[in-house]
Length: 258
Image 1: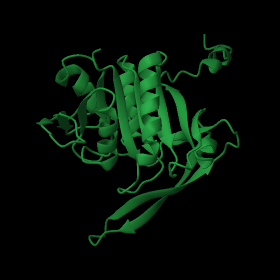
Image 2: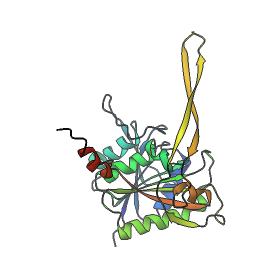
Image 3: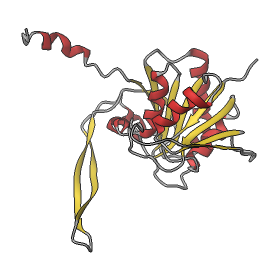
């Protein structure tokens, strides 16, 4: 049988260890083509490049753990997927996988995530898509404990399909292989960031700011991604890109706009 074509991308950049790990796992499942940013793009969300040119560089890699065909892109994660589907691939991939992100994209973090935005861009184009993130920001993070689960999730998605209009947001706890208890399908936890800015002054006398903050979990439910991760489960959240609050339509119509 023909191997599935797997598009691999990320937001940490084409040299990120998480991307290299994901490539090696996907090579065991199908034919892999990589289109990833040429520099880190974390926190870019679904930004696209509209006021500048985009460049891509074709890379031929022969290392055992790398894809045979890779492209680096000067744009954002969403740009990478757009460019892949419109210009670089000769056919649509069977699935797009994004990651493995260095750091969590659970709960409200999904809104800011370049990793998930790449997956969402593929989903918008009708391509089954999954974003993978590990709750460890270290560049030397260990992705191996989740290898089996990642391959299982991708194989299940290829076999069963992902519902139309949905992409999967997968987060992996920082835990050993023995500590990971399994995979849980969850809802996104209600949370936000209590943000603050560290104001400083440059030697030239100009004020500048560093964004910082604390994550506030407002949800005590045991069916959430945050609960799953805290209890050493891999969380799988079906995420939709139709942002309509359907439940609010009737109430708004009762405002009597007309």
